[in-house]
Amino acid sequence: MWPGNIFFENREIEDERVELAGEPDQLVCMGPNLTLRRCTVIVRVPASRLIIHQPRLIDCTVEFKQELRNHRGWVGAILESCRFKGRMMGCDFGPFPGYSTGGEHGQVKDCDFSEARLDACRFHGCDPLTLRLPRWPCFTFADPIGSAAELSRLKWPALFGSVIVAGLGRQPASATALTYHAPSVAKRMETTPEELRAVLEGLDCIIL
Image 1 (tube, one colour):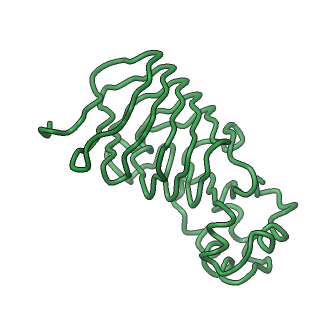
Image 2 (cartoon, rainbow, N blue to C red):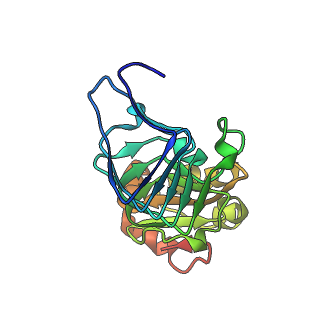
Image 3 (cartoon, rainbow, N blue to C red):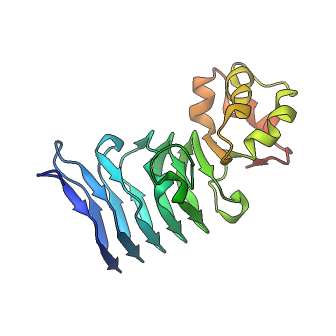
């Protein structure tokens, strides 16, 4: 245990508001051996200060008060019937074998991300149709590896095909869905949301 940091571990919390916040030099740690049931979890720390060590969240609401960027600690968490709100970029959910110790034991089941803004976020080891994913202007590649060949034959605007679509086949085998925020990825790929949607609409492997 590191002196001065904040730990939520070795306990079960029910029907409470849990604030993940601290001073700029403090880490906030969830787990190990932490179970939250029907809690509202407010995250006020950036990814660099949030440590997630295999907690279990059941029927909780998790709200990010600032964008959570490039945080893959959720892959070891068990998430059941939870709701996520706020902005996330480059985050992973569900079991991701080989990524980290315990990453293969995570779970994302019957969760609702419809009020979140997800960009370059991956879901592993789950059926994306059992999740409520955010709709347009977010969109999701279901089965990115399996659909990569088909999508590579389409004409995509600007850099999207050569960067995003070309990378689908290189996703880890555990990845079952990949969600982007159209305005954000369009800006990076030098195109527009409207040009992307014109290609995405009607594709069976796309959740809009």
